[in-house]
Length: 160
Length: 97
Image 1 (cartoon, chains in turn red, blue):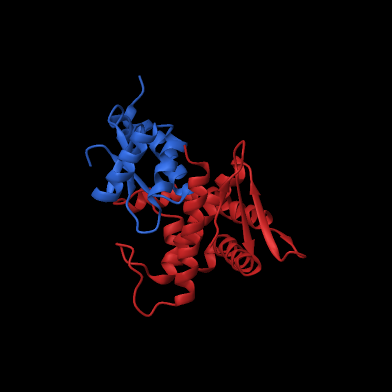
Image 2: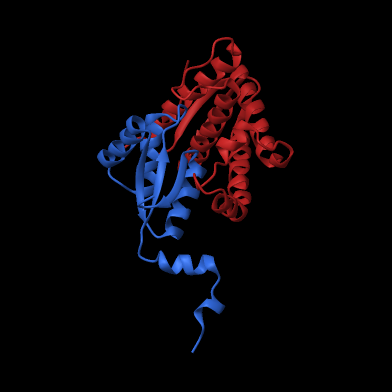
C-alpha cells in the first residue's frame, strides 16, 4: 500500500489505483451530501461527532453557539470534501490517479480524511478505546484503516 | 444616572461579573484521531513548538482531555470552532468549572 510522500519545496503527492480513486470519490461525495443535508438526518451519530457541542454541560449555551457557527463550519467541511474530490484527476490511460497538493491542498485533505474517518468510525460503532466491534462490515473496516494510513503518511510528508 | 438593572439583561450581567475570570478550551480524547495529526494541529493552529504540542497531545491521550488555551470566552469560542474545523473534539468552560 502506498501513501503520500513529500514534494520538494512543500506539499505532498500520492498515486491511487482506480479502485482507491473510486472509493475516495464515493466517500467524499457522500460526506459532502451528509453534511450539506444534515437537516434530513437529525441525531445522526456521525454528524454529532463532525459538528459537536461546544459546551459540554450547558445545553442552552451549546444551542446558542450552534446557532451562530454551525452553518459556517458545515459549509467549510462540504467545501473541503468537494475540493478534495476535485483534486482527484484521473489519468484514464494509466488507470491511476495522481494527487498533487500544495500546502493549502494538504490542509484540505487532512481535514477531509479526518472527517471521513470520524464518519466511518461512527458507522462502525467504534468503542471509546478504538476497538472495532465483532461482526462489523470488514470492507468498511478495511477502508477505515486504509484512510488512517493515508492520513498518517500525509502528516509525515509535511511534518517538521 | 442609569439604572443598570433596567438596561442589562440577566445574561449580560453574568458576562460582566465573569469579566476577568478566565475560560478554557479543552480538547477531549477520541479513538479516531491520530496522535501525529493531533500534535500537528496544535503546532499548526496554536503555533507551539513540537515538544509542547506533543506534551499536550499525550495529555489528551492519557488523561482523556487537556486544557489547550486559556483566555476570554470569545477567544475560547473561536478556538473551539477552529478545533471542530480540524475534526478535534473540543469544548469551552469557565476555568474553575
